[in-house]
Length: 311
Image 1 (cartoon, rainbow, N blue to C red):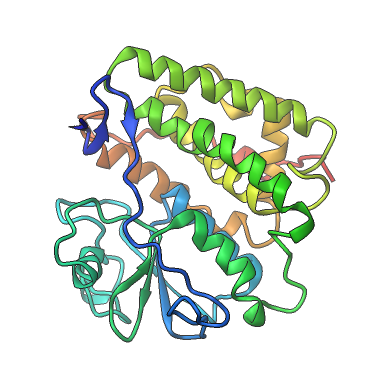
Image 2: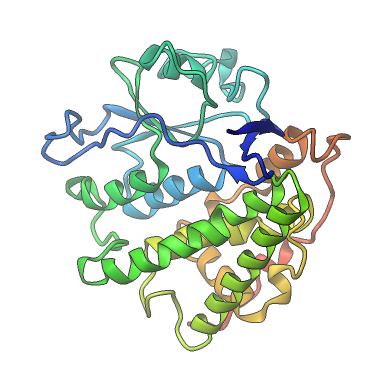
C-alpha cells in the first residue's frame, strides 16, 4: 500500500514510488500504432525545469525536428491544477487553446486521477494526449521520425550500439535519474540512505568509465549521454542541497564535471538549459521540503562555459 508524501507516492517504508506513465501509445513512421509521424500534427509540451522533458527538448533540437513538432513550454511553477500555460499570452497555449495541461489529460481520460506530467505529446487536432511515456518519446524521435531529421543529424540510437546503450540506461535510470528523486522524496531515513549510496556508487562507476573515453559508449554522443546529462546539469543547483545528495557536487568530481561541460557545450544542448526555471521549479514547488520557498542565489554557474579538454 502506498501513501502520499510531498505530493508524491511513497511505499509503507517511506521509499519514493514513481507514478507509472498513463499514456503509452507510440507515434510510428508507418502509422501502424494508430499514430503516424506527420509534421505539424503533434505538440510537445514540456517544462524546462523537468529533466525528463529536457531530454525530449534536446533530442528534438539535435535532430532538427523543430519545424515538424511544435513546442509548448509551461510555467516552471505548478499550482493545485498542475502545469500552467502562463508564459503565453492570455495564459493559454496558442495552439491547443488550453490553460492547463490537465485539460488535455482529462479530455483523453476523464477518469484520470494521477499527476499530470511532462513531457507529453498532444494530438493538435483532437487535443488529446498521445503519450507521456518519456523513455520511449526520445527513442521514437530518433527512430520513427527519421524522414524529417535535418541533413547531417546525429544518430543518437545507432543499431550497432543499442544493446550497450540499453544496458547503461537501466542502472543510470534507477540509481541516478530516478535515484535523486528517491533520495529527495524519501519519507524515512533508511530508503534515503539506500538511494544516496546507490546514486554515488553509480556516479563513481561512470566516472571510472569516462576516464578513458569521451562518451558513455565511446566517441559518439548517444541517447544515454543525454539521459545522464539532464541529471548532471541539475545536480549542483538542485539535487545536492534540495534533495540531500551531498556527498559531492559534480564540480568536485573532475571527470564527470569535464564530461558534463563537454555535453553542455555541444551545439544545440547548452541553449536548452534554463537554470532559472530549474531552480524556481524545485525550490518554489516542493513546499514540504523547502517550506519557505526561498530560491537560493547560488551556486556559481559560470563554470559551465569553461574549456573541458575532452575533445
